[in-house]
Amino acid sequence: MDKQTSQTIQDVLEYALQHNGDIGDTIHLQFTGPVNSFYAGNDFNNIWSHKEKWEPLADSLYYFIEHAAWQGLFPNDYHFKKLQKIKASLDNDSMKRMDANLWTKADLMLTDGFIHLVKDLKQGHLSKDSISFNKKELTDTFYSATLANLLSAGQLTNALNALQPANEGYRALKDCIPRFLDSMDKRTYTYVTYPFKTNDEKDSLSFIKKLQKRLSESKCIEPGTSLPDTVQLKAAIKKFQHLKGIKQDGMISAGLIKTLNNNDAERFKRIAITLDRYRQLPDSMPEKYIWVNLPAYYMQLIDHDTIVIQSKIICGKPATRTPLLNSYITDMVTYPTWTVPNSIIVKQYLPKLKTNPNYLDGIGLHLVNDKGETVNGSDVKWSKYTKGIPYKIMQGSGDDNALGIMKFNFSNAYAVYLHDTNQRYLFKNATRALSHGCVRVQEWQKLAFYIARNDSMNVKPGETLRYTTDSIMSWLDRKENKRIGVKNKISLFIRYFTCEARNGKIKFYDDIYGEDKIIREKYFTDK
Image 1 (cartoon, rainbow, N blue to C red):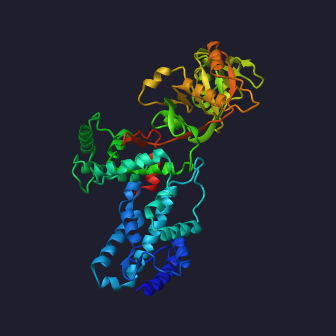
Image 2: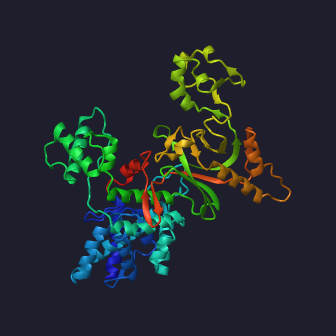
């Protein structure tokens, strides 16, 4: 049987290479190239069974795939249903055990499934962007070596765990998944995509059909082939809103669709997305770094895996999002001035200056030309500008400055920074996506003093440090504008994680910028 299976594997792989991974019976290999590369280096010998019996590693891999959800993955991505059917046939039917084709398909699916697991556990589903650290494509050589090492060592769990992030947040979130799954409502609900394309009758009809189906799944409207009229649909929406304890206005809105799509199956996809975001982080994080999680509205300073500062933040509004980035703190500024970004000038100030040339005077801002001279607004012909102006709009330092009394600069292409604020009362809000893009930090003083102490503790022989916590306090007391260069630059990660482990449970945050929605619709529609 092993000899027959080996020959069949070679023949089937030759066919698969010519037919986009197809090996018959609707079975499709996702990683045909790496699978073929491994078997070619192994004389096309079967590896998961011998003499019509499963190898222990095959049982282990099958079990891992069956419970892939514990890893934030989806079993059917790794041929689970097909494997389940073939395995039942081979285990329970002595005649089927004589069929080399079945053993071949099982062997190839297990190998393809393993390689797919390697890829997903190490790099995830998400495309590699400017903030990803795992940007290199995994090679056929890597997959073959990983599988060869597994076959040699015989320890599946150890091999797959070694591929995953060592990040404590990743591990804690993954540890919460079994508990989440145990209490999960496993019913499948129709996902409603919104908004639909305006002036597109086909898309709007498709939307109404999906909405009707979703409302029928919550027993708020009768399922049917005919579309509901406006009165019926409004009544059904009100019934659903009543069930959820929200305002019963019967209106179709982004908020309604968000509530309709907020079920355990969709929450699991958000867990999967978050784990993938962890997989985009460095293999090891710096000893000290600043972590800003925008949907959770917090900043943390981590020192040797310990949170030494936790602070509320205010981040960008959906229309003026805070960018995701990797950087490091370069300097701090006491009593900073504020130069208004061009995007704000064009959207917010220019329209008002066209009707009132002296508008800036009333809000404490002033115009500055390229020579640093103040310009009178009434001397400028505002009507000729649409995409920008040849001046800076600035706000002088002081207690009323929009940046507050402390600013933290870091290298980035977006002209954003961390800073204090003159609207500290906003930290009381539960929802704090309120800024033009910068991150306002409630505990700015703790952050500034930590950075100062870190520099003081790391002064090298022969070096002198030009500032301390005491000098920062003195400059603040005297309301002096000072730029403070940071010697020991602390890494900064601004990220978008909509769930995390908290006290053994998973806490979900609002998808404030719709980033999860975009990723869900791009990578997880068929999950």
